Length: 349
Image (cartoon, rainbow, N blue to C red; front, side, top):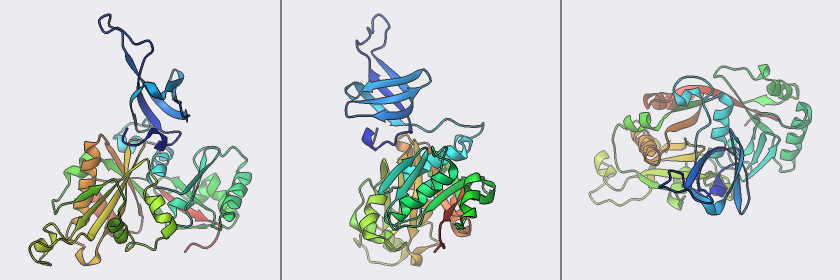
């Protein structure tokens, strides 16, 4: 597993290879190890519990040989990136973007990050909150009020669904919550995106967030300094990609002299890796260099890096009215899976 098992969210689907005790006898044809596949339901300092088809399996950490997150089971026939249900895709996407606080309300997840990003400050209402709906919404409103934040929910469905047709959406609308811009969830395979690479300059990859990448990210949106690093580094694993003017790009574009070593990124992107999927986000290109294929090349290189690490599926979220970005992603092979909207208990800004 690329990240510590402690970084894997409870509820993720995993496969764990572990040593049997007593070990088997190879000459007698009995195994010395076994695999447990299922949902990670608990962990302690000493062991983990995986809910398999045969029941819960408690595995001592000292016996674990290898482990990794794997995608949820498909809910219908078709390509794996489209066969996943809307709810399962939302569960996959949730940990691919960080949050400073996460708290469970039944099967709902409440997230807060001092107001930095809507995803980092919203409820993922999947399943049963463990309370009557009205009481659950009361709890949500109080939880965010205690943090000085507006309550917000990410409500998902088919690409053209109406929030009022969803029981949660109807409850929120009856309370005066407002509906924000519709967002599309696009999915594909890492093979598809990696193979669509138009080519381009060197791409720097790092699992660590550094000041140079973060400075470029600050050009894409207003950041909350006390929250930004925690959110960007808050996935089980993340990968930061960038293209800088140095390393030959400036000469290619006729913007610099030979030997230029300018480390400042002119294009960036991030993958948040969770539950066997790679989630693309934070894609940005310097406005002066747009239309030159840098975003497509960077995205393809990120996909190729994830593929080399055994990740086969990708997702991203893009606002439904961002036609330029949608064209880019669809050229790379992404397809429309579902959508979501944010509902907020106050004016949207």
